[in-house]
Image 1: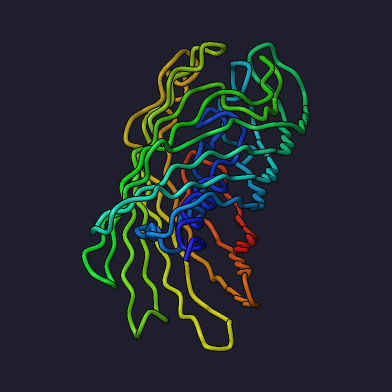
Image 2: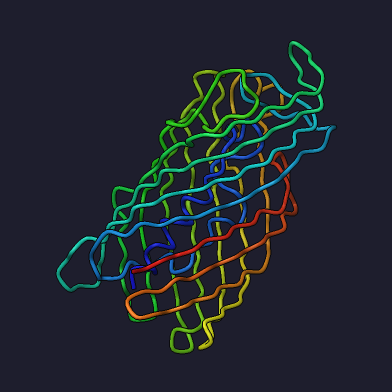
Length: 314
């Protein structure tokens, strides 16, 4: 049952793809990547578990669109590739039997970022590319609290905190850090049907950024809603659909953001997912693969995010 709680910690890690917040048209959240299996459910079995995950995103903004970039100023025709591997530790607290269970988590991410622009404005330069490989901003949730309305309905409350610990260099186009603290109060909900074989889960949150002191750029707060529906079969296979909506609540502020009218963005995404669960005596592994198509995108990178995860319980 520990695998149920791991999904929340793992997918929270995988959505945190890098570059430089909404300064480069993408922030902590990628559309649809935060949809989390069993997002409302922390099981009662206590203990420490480790997890590994991998996510990939390749997106771009039209060459006719100015985008604020790391190091200050703006650029035309941004294309970026992100790869993120994560190691997550999740500890489920030992509690007396009740309708509440609690957990804490911490994630160490490692990122590869590759960014290209057609032209950089402000101290004009022609096409430019940059890439970096290294540790990304670590993050943690001091408390994840899960309330069980019944055997089939669950809700969770948490605060994810992202620290600017990754590889950042002022003026470099690609960075494995956002160079900001980010605070994300999050609510997850899970409902189970058909004796638990049909799951609907939703995750909603608001991301609050501190100011990037290197560029004097303040990202506006971003609301996000992600959901999934998956049917699991006795063979171990599961199929479903996943979707996400990102909507920036406030304009970005600062010299570059003001010139670009606040650079307020939004996006939608939909796509399929497939799972496979294999059990053996004393353990199990579940693989999950999702692919999404982003559409109705404004002032954000647009692409097709994909994620592969493996949840191992021994």
